[in-house]
Amino acid sequence: MERRSRRTRILRWWRLPFWTLALFTGAKSFIDNPIIGSRRLNRAGLHVWRLKAAHALAWSRRRRLARLLPAELREQFDRDGFIVIRDFLPRDGFDQLQSELLNTELPGRVHQQGDTLTRRFAIGPELRAGFPQLNRLLDSPTWKGVTSYVASTRSQPIYYIQSIFGGVVEGPPDPQLQLHADTFHPSMKAWLFLTDVPEDGRPLTYVAGSHRASHERLAWERRRSVSVLDDGDRLSQRGSLRIATEELPVLGLPQPTSFAVPANTLVVIDTFGFHARADSDRPTKRVELWGFS
Image (tube, rainbow, N blue to C red):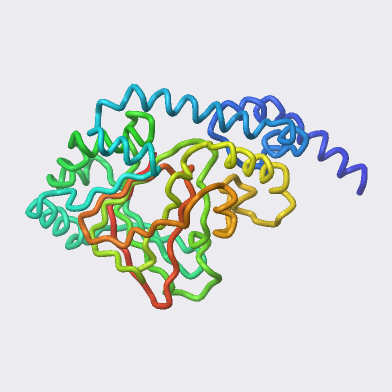
């Protein structure tokens, strides 16, 4: 048995060149790549080096994309890590979009996390051709400018029509209720809410300013990169680090902002910043146009 275990460990290391090359990609899992997850290397600063390099590249690209959006929106994002635009579409345009998307039966896939079901239908060229208001929205200069700046790339995001049903099935707590960063590098998610999101409707929450690689955040990231394999949190081990609200003051960060907003509100965030769904004591439903890049 010991000989077989040793042979398995030796054979596993044929992947070493691929694990090494992954350092220069968006690969984030501490548990699946022993170089990314190496305590010794992360004590020496590997994780923090990757994070700082990714952020330097992203902000350099953002400087070149700054002309694509109004100065006040750029300043809001640079300060907070999110952009919020209420009444994003003119009323008649939003009513048309809402009618197109909510009154059409679309096949989708359903994913369960804890007590929450998420139903998604992918938006492709065929759907866009059939829904002119949706097509105009995704091609509009403001939409493209905001999403490109936050994502730090003009690459086309991936879009879905998404419905989130919270607290509707038996299961453990939804893991999305815990504050987390999606990954170590800047990335973008966008929501155009097609229905109102009340305070008790499991709204999106975001910690303002947590998109910045501050000295406090870098120190926290270094500690977590060294200890993450010991804490038993599978999602953190896969690179989506969780944080408790009581840790935020140590990082010089405020409590989360809740986006309980009316329909026709656009929210775009950098998912390196800490975010989560708020909890609720009742079953909830959110419907939104959702994209990520």
